[in-house]
Length: 357
Image (cartoon, rainbow, N blue to C red; front, top):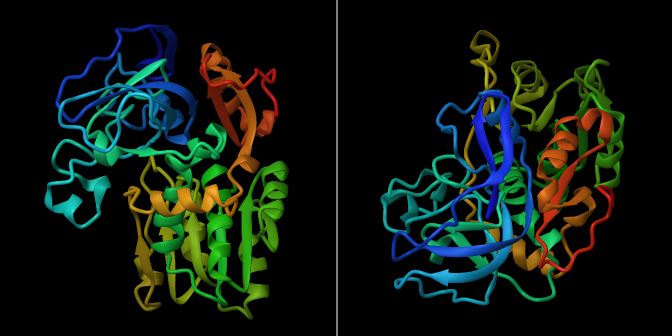
């Protein structure tokens, strides 16, 4: 089979790799029908995630069909259509027992495309299948479902829920990429008074407006002033950092009001300064986190009912064998307008759309 293989900083290729096989009795082998590229994959290629070894197949989000299971798998069987979660969970360790699957100490957590071969391939081995794949209803399209593997649970859990968004809040989302846009969509479920999106790209700010932002601001044009004007100088109740660079993190801490929350979602590859000399007196709550995906079943029900704008985030589609082209389009998002790029396997039934929806 073929997969997208990491070969070191700035180097990757779509190439022949060994077919995956069941290694443990809790494994499942999934034929990949839809997969997407995450901003974290770009961080890996930049060298920001040194745990990823050269030779690893990248990717941690997919929809596909079970083709084989280990003898201890009970919840799915060959022929089932499933969502492959970005997080694997052993289900037995103290963290899994508290639904903190991202911190699994039993061999799970974020391992796909990180510590073991991932989903950007024709087939993938999924450890701990009973807790790491989710059966899909036939009515949910693969392109919609695949966005529930990572970006929607990440933005919802690490951004909206950790940030404690409540009715009547002012919420600022810094970074209107896929995670930020999903945060805007899921923050709206809690009826905030207003949502303000901050980004550098006009196309992403326009997308933020379509998905429910009440105001937008160019990050170069004093967004802190806009937030102050809209909140009588107090600042935002919740600020969600969805970029992962020091400048955006420090901006978030300047925008939050006394007693407010800063929820960091972005993956940081460089140190950021925490200005405690200014923040210590403000009763700020700062949260970070890796997604646990405990919300995935809920989000799946909402998506099936048409309550999440999943497909609205997809701007480009490709067949799997154009993985390198898809990466190029996604990496040049400022030029291409890419939000979420989805690749389909030959059996998915989705026609090639020449790279653009």
